[in-house]
Image (tube, rainbow, N blue to C red; front, side, top):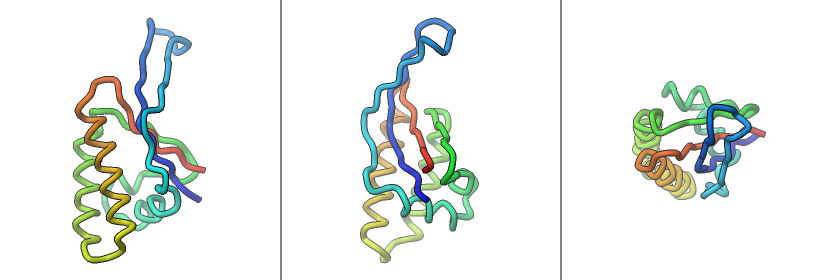
Length: 111
């Protein structure tokens, strides 16, 4: 069970889904089980909806809430596992990049 997190650039030619092109820009390599566990234990609505068995796409419109929930989780884990803090910092970096550039999405892909 795990959730892999990637930042992608999406370009769309026309209105057909056949014209949709996805370019992977970055990923959080160690996100898998750790992120899935954080989401399962979270009381925050967006993180709570992350499903370790399905995929979810977050756009720039979703980033303010996603960033806020990641920051709250980061603050709540202060003084705990350094690996978790590093993971949350990496996720925040991807989320902030997504929020700042048009055409980017964060993909949360379950196993």
